[in-house]
Length: 284
Image 1 (cartoon, rainbow, N blue to C red):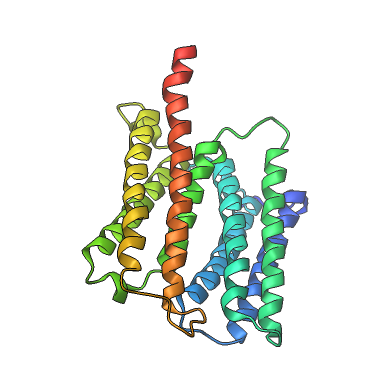
Image 2: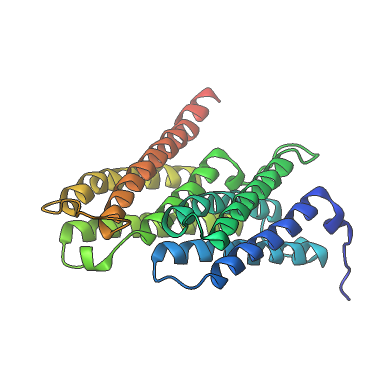
């Protein structure tokens, strides 16, 4: 017999989650009604709102039916990490969508952008409530500084993927190396997130913090090579065409900029990991 928890819907965090479901649903409905656009940026924005709507509804149902207490994962860590990720995704979509798809008379697109910003505010509010939750700080890895950095790394990688043009890098070994760097680092970051949410770190026969430090150092070195190689080969004999209104050349700039951003995030992650592994132990 299923025991329903009506209180989960009346708490402030429950009300915010219901608003998240409604607002994200309105966002992707408005965009869908405006018509499909053959663009990876459009696909990313639609994926963001659908993804956030689905998982917000999933979390509501799990807590309403009390099934959340039976799942073999750190539920508070999962919900907080999701809220952080959803806030970042909605924020990026609120920038990308109006940049590429709105105009002064595109009222549905403008409304979708405004509602997406409201979604961002709702998810930020959920994170704040989680931090202010009675009982102290959240102890899960994904709610810590390195956990948040891992979420940022995967998000930036997703933005990079939406800006990649297979026709551009398919026959260029240098650019193929860069795509391999983005893909490998993205996959390993996801694996780390899944292992922490699934509470599988105890299965490791060695220190997870040391493994994380080694990975961060390697990922940083790989992103350093991508930061140099991508603009070197991407812009070689490839000046900006005129006119160029959101043309493929602009995507090369986006990938270059996001590569630098992710490199900075990986450097911060590496510094923090080294501090935790070496200097914390020395103090003890």
